[in-house]
Image (cartoon, rainbow, N blue to C red):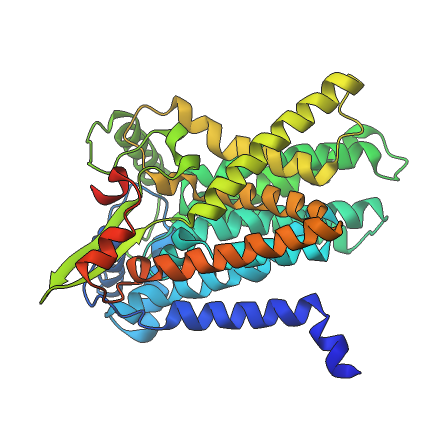
Length: 426
């Protein structure tokens, strides 16, 4: 009886999924044994910090400090460079379960989302590489999860836990934007959630009194957390205001004036179609190929893109039909708005862009897909289709596994996995 209950438990399967994903991500994480792609930056920044230096980077300090923690704990070698992204990349799986469950009030949607997160190739690659984008996605999702929890607690009338949850959400926004400035992209969504929550909160105060705690949590706290990373950054004490100001002006100019082009540059509108993956490493030894390509799972990417288009059309139809937004499905609306907020701004960026800029938006595309798959699974035929899609995604992950993990394969086997010319050239 206990075993049957355990097997039917979503939490049990989430634990199994997370442990399996950890094992698969950790296996051969030291291969290749040299820097790949932008590891030429962050692990080297770590060694500079640890030797008393103060490296300059075009991003705030949080991401490189997290990579530094791994090097400090485990040494200046591949495992040390990659272990902290491994931890956060694995934790993305239960976190995705939590966010989807909160958004859609469905544990099944959460389990579907976690499964798709675990089977995506690009998320897999970034969880095994000494880069900072995994941290960006993690703290973006954590900020939203905490905001959703805070909303529920506020509407339930909690006087203690709700303010703490809002503060924690604001702190997570601060960390996300301290990894990369684009971490601030989730802020408008969370601010909108807070505003609507304040309007519906069961409190007798005037609106100004209701909104004040949210202003502290979502404006002051993110700024304080963001500033603390600069103040506490090793090798740069004492920090004075002109130093911080000069870094920001210099970095802003760097980003807006960056004209350098790479063979793996891609357009923002190409990302949902997975047209231009990045080759992190690609070598041939004795007739054997070993490659790491940041290639997403095609079924998950194309399926989530289709689901997102359906959602945009569906929500637009509801708005036109109802002529108001009050009765829109909350979770689907938040997920779709988050996707657009994290993706569409890239249309106005003139510098060279790369597919990894899509990772945060991808997370919400997967959430949207999990919503529709959950809806589909409520019907007998639909349940079979959902199971079939998940199995097909797992098969696709296994098929592409050699070229996202540097597993040795023959040149012919490698070439068979280059479905499009744009995948093969970099």
